[in-house]
Length: 327
Image (cartoon, rainbow, N blue to C red; front, side, top):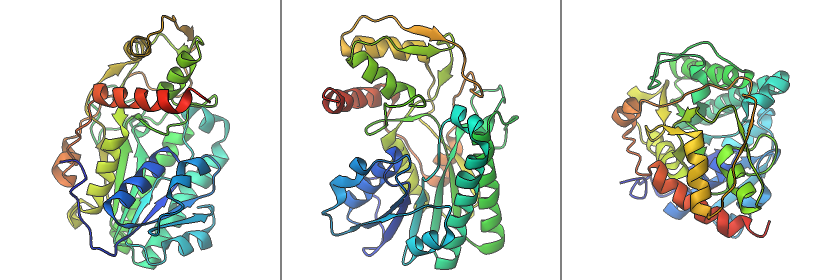
């Protein structure tokens, strides 16, 4: 069940890129709890030192401050590594529209650097973060691998390019790559700050402060919100996957569908506040509806997500109440 019973060789070394970020720091924590060695690579451009300070005293943990756009740094980070969990990237669809050259350099070239470093270092498995944004304007639900539409943002282009490069590295260079298309991940340590903050932590913080949040659009857009524990499971199970599963991409979600307006009112009820939202314009590049078919990940990765949206949002609310009230 889950990932707690997954075992690797005792001396296994994991490299988590973007390890000071939301997903990356949770991966570091889970691997350390399982008793394996973790090397964290992050340039702290979007990740936070506070996310990884809790690991400093652990003997199995190592931190490298460095940029994935630098191949030498990537090569150094991959020395002696068995499994790479590549999470380093800049997110946000709207920000990517404002910064296309940076997204190309960071998300595409940076990922290519990591694959090349992993190949040269003899890494066993290269698991990387992709995104549901690659489905673009494909209208059919649920979203299924192999049925993609027109890409709607530079961010989506960057993730699609990563998938194509990963396929080439598996075909031509023998690097076993596994792409995980995340669907709206949420949970502890997700940053509530900034104009590009994810919607759930942003709403929670504003409601805790008595502020009136703004919903982009009419609130009738739907998402397959995925709790962080499911994502940890997917990464670790990809490290255990058969060779035949390499060079492919997988939807990582719970397989549900939640409407933004419903989520908003569930948050107000859970927090005991009565605040009506503002409604703003739709965000450029956003898709209207998202819901994942996770059958491929179940079949080829053994992925079996245990955390429903309802279970996850209760845990997330408790974490934010404990950690944001004083901030």
